[in-house]
Amino acid sequence: MSQVTRVACGIDIGGSGIKGALVDLETGEFAGERVRIDTPQHSTPEAVAEVCGQIIEKLGVEPDVPVGITFPAPIVHGTVRFMANLDKSWVGLNVNELMTQALGRRSYALNDADAAGLAEVAYGAAKGVGGTVIVTTLGTGIGSAVIVDGTLVPNTELGHLEIDGHDAESRASSHQREIHDMSWKKWAKRLQRYYGHVEMLFSPDLLVVGGGVSKKHGKFLPLLDLRAPIVPAKLLNTAGIVGAAYEAARVAGK
Image (cartoon, rainbow, N blue to C red; front, side, top):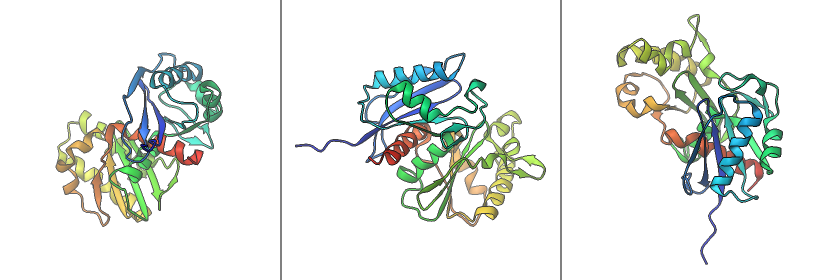
């Protein structure tokens, strides 16, 4: 008799699309197809919850399977503190309660960068690393996750550290490199200033760099001079879904 695969469902809510998949909790890989539906133009809680319900239905998620949902916002004890990429009516809402009611099953919400960080620690570039791990996502801004001996310190927002009088992500994000047509060397100087400051504050045991630009890590990571090892992320596009599923299963005690 074959062993039943332990799975959880992850849903990753973004400004343009909502993606979901069942995740094999042993491997961190998708246990089947990934489903994507456009984020509703009027991205109210009710409209987004309806899309999440459609994804659950398309995936055929069983009632006892934990569901984790990422949001592009800080989630404090289940509540959205502020929202940039979805309708402002999310602010102050307890999304755990909303999604649990809308989906008819216990659902667990977390910040998208935190989910990506958990995925890298559980299955990716930081698997098996003890101490303090900081996972950053370089994109339009800079997302961050801090994990200490496997435990997440949520909602760190290290992209908004003020360095030399500037919001860090306004200088060092990959979006800034693109719009200012910076050379890799020039951008690496900005990254050096950013990661050097983060290192001074936290003394991490490992730094992990994610985001689409991490596929080209050979062009900029070797230019950085830090005490801590700094490595590219492994999960990339799957990290949000995988981290959401992992956290939902952990909280559910499955």
